[in-house]
Figure 1 (cartoon, rainbow, N blue to C red):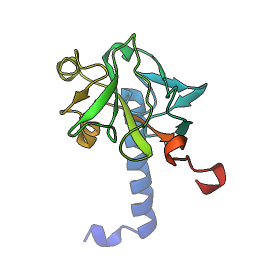
Figure 2 (figure 1 turned 180 degrees about the horizontal axis):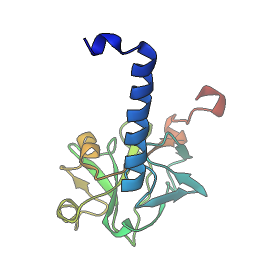
Figure 3 (figure 1 turned 45 degrees about the horizontal axis):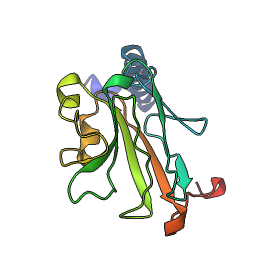
Length: 167
C-alpha cells in the first residue's frame, strides 16, 4: 500500500538523488574525478575512455608522455598490433617508450594506457617492446580505476582519423 502512494515524480527524484550520490562517491574515491596517470601526445591530453585519434606515416610513430602518481605502474599496449596473440607492450612503467606505428594489422589501432596493481604489472616487466599474450582486449576489464584509450592511424597504409565534424 505504501508503494501505491508514491508518485512518479518522487520516484524520479529519488533515482536522480541516488545517481548523484553514486557520482559524488566515485569522484571522492578517485574512480573518475582524480586520475593516477596523465597521457600526453603531441600536446593533447588523453583522458580516461577517450576517443582521440592520432595519425602517423609509420616512420616516426606516436610517442606518448606518461606522468602522474602511477606512471611507473602503467602499461601501454596495442591490441591491434602484430602479435598472433596478445599485444605489443609499448610502455612498461618507463622510462622508455616504443613508438606506435600501426604498421601491421588494421590501419587504425586501438591503444590502452592503464595503471595496474603491482601483482599484474610484474607480469609485464621484461616484455617492453615485445608481444605478451596476457595483454588482450579483455585486459581493459582488469583496470584498477582508469583506462586511457586512443587510436593510432597509419596514413601510409590508408588509415585516417575521423574529422571533427564526423565525430
